[in-house]
Length: 433
Picture 1 (cartoon, rainbow, N blue to C red):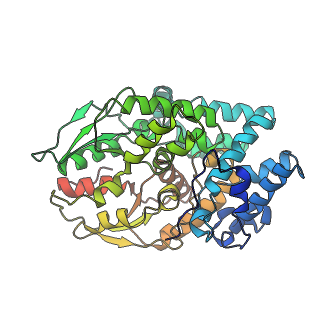
Picture 2 (tube, rainbow, N blue to C red):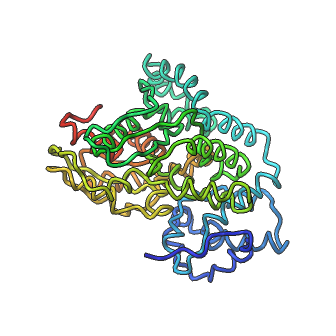
Picture 3 (tube, one colour):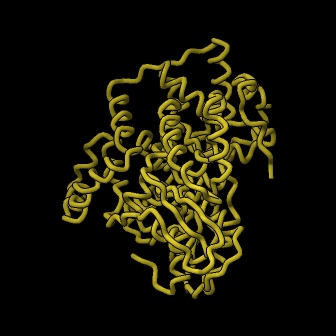
C-alpha cells in the first residue's frame, strides 16, 4: 500500500503540497474526468498545474479555471494511484475554499448551491422536505411527471433533483442507548447517525445498531447530532464545515466510548480528517484529533472484532461497489468483502473497474449532472456485467446515483448496505425490500 505524504500542518504550506507532484502521470488513468474527456486540465496533474499557476499569479481565477476545478469529483482515486503520496485531497479542498471566497459565481449557480447547502446538512429540514417528496413519489405524481417528458424541458440540475429523489422511507427514531444482546458487553460504541442516512436510509442505522448489539457492543446515539461537515468541506465551505464539526465533537465528548462508528463512506473520511480540518486552530486541534482517533467505519470495526453472532445463509450473488471515500480516502477495501464472505451461501462478485467512481461524489451529481451521468453510465455498465442478484453499497449517495441510472434503463437491481446484508444473515430474516 502506498503511504500518503506527511499530513498538512501549519508548517506545511500549499506550495509544499503542490511541489510533491512530480508530474509522472500515474493519476491519469485513475481519474474519471480524464477518462471521459482526455483533457490534461481535467486530470489531477493538470489541476495541480492550475493551482501552481494561481499561486504564482500566472493565471487568474476566471470561469474557465474554476470550471476545471468544479469538474473534479474529489473521488481521491488519484491519491491511491500516486507513487509520490501527493495529498490531492487537501489541495482540492483548499482550492475550492479559495474559489468560494475569491470567485463570483453566476446568480443562478450561486442560488442553486446555497439552496442545496441550506437543506442537505440539516436533518430536520431534510425531514420536512421528505414529507412532500414522499407524497410526490407514493401518489404516482412522479411517475406521471417522468412519463410526460416535462423533465427534459427543465434545467439539467432541476431534472437531476427528480432523478435522485430517494425512495420514501419510514423514519426510525433512534433511542439514546441500545444494550448489547450478548452478555457481558464487550465494548461501548457511539453511532454517528448522519443526515441523508438518518432521514432517507433509516434502515441502515437500525441494521448497524442491531449488528453491533448482536456482536456484544453497547451502542449509544448521542443527541443532539447535526451534520459532520463532509458536504461542506468537500465543496470548499471550510468555515461551515468547522462549525458543524465543532458541534459534533462537543456532543460526542460527553460519552465515554471505545469507538465512534460511522456507516456512510463520505462522512467517515471527513470524520477521520478532523485533526487536519482544525490544524491551524490551537484551541480545537487536540480535541479534533482525539475524536478522529476513535472513528471507525462500521465495516472496518466489525472486521477487527471476532464475531460471536451466528450467520445464517443468504443464497445470493452480491456485487460489492467500492465507494470512493471508503476505498480511496480511507483505504478500506478488504473489510467489507470479508464481512460479506462470512455469510454462508453468499457469492461475492467482482465489478469490473470496481474502484472507479459512480459519479455521485457528494453533491457533484447535482452540480455537474452531465458529467455525473456520463461517469455513472460506465459504472452501471460494469455493475450489470457482474451479473449479480444484489448490489452492496456502503454510501447513500452512491446507492441513489446507481439506482437512478438503473431506473432510466428500466432495470431493477436491489441495493443494500453491507451492514443490512449482515443484519439479515444474523437475524435469519429476508432482506427488507
